[in-house]
Image 1 (spheres, protein in one colour):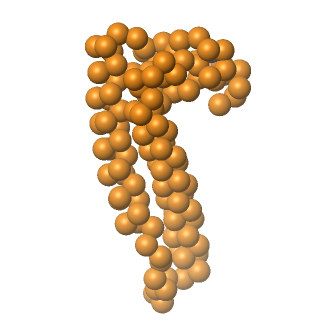
Image 2 (cartoon, rainbow, N blue to C red):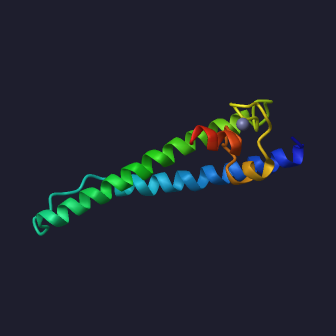
Image 3 (tube, rainbow, N blue to C red):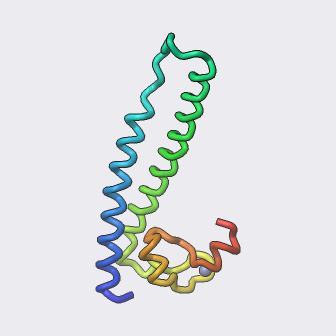
Length: 114
Ligand SMILES: [Zn+2]
């Protein structure tokens, strides 16, 4: 991989990490326990709980992606980065620009059903 591309990907990863950290912060705020609100009927309370489950899922996903981005950032200067874990072919730069933490090429990802 060219140095120029590496630098570009590093910047992309850094930006993604910043955005995600913000997201996680916002989600954490939303995840504060729901107070017992006597003005809410059961249905309203159920739907609040449902909303919160979605928020929890988004929060978990965001944290996982943050970890993947961080480890991609640490690996970017190694030969391991940008190489598919399955077929050991290079992952295309176009794909890395979109998803810099990619561990698999498009073909393998489809094959593995990821
Ligand atoms: Zn592959």
